[in-house]
Length: 425
Image 1 (cartoon, rainbow, N blue to C red):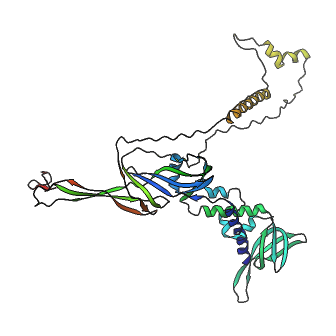
Image 2: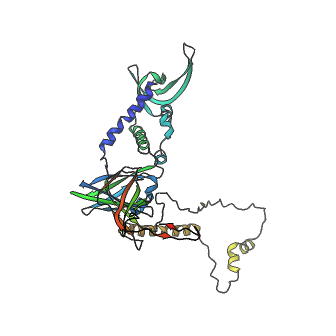
Image 3: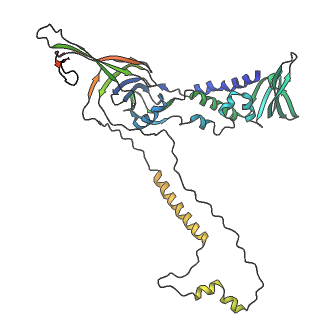
């Protein structure tokens, strides 16, 4: 099917032009990492920008909630325009308003049939045929070798009537409507951007003028760093020797989506209390449904033919009965309420309230306050003087303690362990 590939190539050919027209965001290098024994990582990015610029931050899907909760940008000469990221189910949203599904991109025949009635221009053996796409249908046939194959017949409604041609014989097929080309291009772009289901790209819009340094920080969950210690004891025969050597190694893991290239690494020994909050999830308020009131037709009862005088009919009328009814002490006078009048008053009140509220909405401003909070009363920090490089998904063993300490061999006697022999310690 030569035309199938031509159609897809024509669509893909538009994509690089659209991407190049946009300002491609710059990636954010990691500059500082603070790991805690509580399973948290404080990540800082640093970069130099000139003027207004968009920067790209790639994160794992399970880290989005923590970043949305703790993200802070330091830009003394600029401001943050906003942060955009794909929705929780971006592909479902991208195809929601399209006439085709994601699986239809795998079969161009289904893609063409999704735009039934669209105007197309087909080139077949040098002839250019314009018309409306009616249908692409499979037609099995037997070849001269006795083998069965399936060819696809394209039916078009042209000015001269219906025309049928083999889709395999077409050199090109183009949609006349530019909006259809845009729909297919955007769908392909969405599939490409979401090729990795476990990763999301955040785009930060940094506003300002001039060349300046920008820092960005957030807290995400991370594997806690582990410690392993080594002791070199003094020789037992050395008299009076009490100086030994202690060496502690830290096991560090980079389970983020970014490589750590020449980063400032700090290890914190503490036990802060942290919580999770799913901010990336979409929530909808359950609103009770109020049924629409439909008024029925007012129909008189069936006349049975009863005749009476005018005085008797007047006395039995509802108005006369209401006048004759005794009034209850403290009861209000009988009155008729117009249903339409109540509805109009309620609508008018709601309309005035909405107008007043809309006036206040114009003055609403979002305030961003950054506050640093230490939840642990005591902690020990190990900051490495040399910068560290660790690729994403890799582990690192690095010494954080290496010094002489006063130590000596002792005997520990535990009767429950052994009733006669002490332990060397």
